[in-house]
Length: 179
Image (cartoon, rainbow, N blue to C red):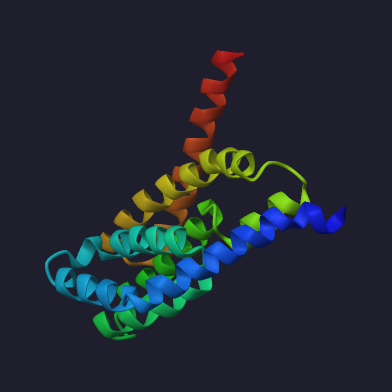
């Protein structure tokens, strides 16, 4: 009975690994590298937000946050020298985007195993997690836009925390009206 319960998870993981092998063989990391490199000069202040979005999309498509780290962090290090404050912000954006995309991805191994372990429908599990992840991603995107213009953690981090608290207060007020 336990093995029968794991068969859907095993099949989804097998398909996810096949998709990852296919994106690797198509050269996705080189495409992303060239895209980021060509757009870096013109939109340097928006680059943390761009890296965040690329990280989200890559991790969502491949189902792996660690693979996204491996693709994007070297690209960010090539765009910015490590003494530039934007390099740390962009590496942070890469990691946050990768974890967000991995959390939202229906082909992520952690998402598959979480739904299998809870013995709930996989699609239902993914769809119930999306509102939380998308809310946090939206606040993070605005925060990375701000951090691109003010790459100082002492200023950007408190502003981001306040923005998240305001978002939660708005959600609470909207939920109170609906009840």
